[in-house]
Image 1 (tube, one colour):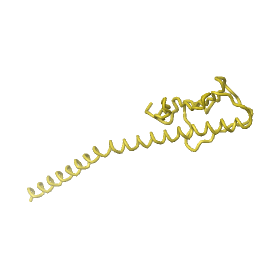
Image 2: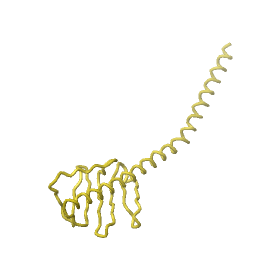
Image 3: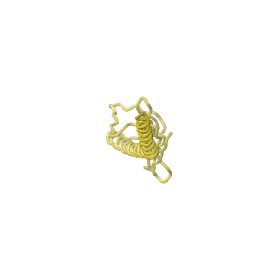
Image 4: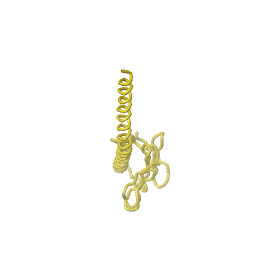
Length: 145
């Protein structure tokens, strides 16, 4: 009787061990996949937020040109406190209230510049753990900090 109980408890331990090992193998396979999916989603969100920020700066520039002439290059510098505007390299304080509204998040750092030739430059726009820059061929590149 004792021998039979010992065999049953040993077989139960073996079964539970097999289940735990099986679950560990599944976790070892799934964790990197899930991590990669989360990373790619965060990166895509950063690219999308960068595009939204560029569009917002462009629309602000157009809006300001309707009320008064805005000099180029026109630059918006973002930091943790908000944003600062520059025209021709000089800081500008506009008389009317300016509220930048963006569908996504505002960056915590970086800048967007509308150049004299009409192109847009993006430098170190920071969203979460990603910094986004614009390459020479105007493609956005977002990488971990």
